Amino acid sequence: MSQFRLCLIAITFLSLLCSSTAKSQSATTTQSPDELAIRQTALDYIEGWYEGDAARMERALHPELAKRMVAPDTRGQSHLNQMSAMTLVQATRAGGGSRTPKDEQQKEITILDRFNNAAMVKIVASSWVGYLEEVKFNGQWKIINVLWELKSEQK
Image (cartoon, rainbow, N blue to C red; front, side, top):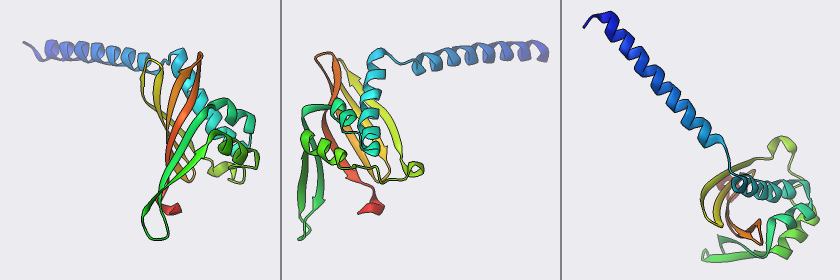
């Protein structure tokens, strides 16, 4: 086979490969209505916190939310810190993260997994990382559990 024909076959193959890769990438960037709603719930949570917007925070939370963090107590033993939905809404109403300068407000949202009416979402914020468990409850996505940890420089 001549070099010209081999080159032509290689170009055709690469063209087909690039075309199918582009199609699969555009398919993965298209989000379902549920994925958009899951992301919006996470945004309501983190942006509500930064804006001190208690109504937005409350909209994101299931009323029986449990927000937990393990931290060492004064003796170095693990201690479980807990917050309820009401406590978090009140902390947001009191200003929440509104003292965080806009240029430092980090709000990286990643949907880690979703199955039917349950989703796991990771948020990287300015001073902490949180893992949100969201549930579709009466047709709306709500945060029902949060496990979070301060970033190492904040400890």
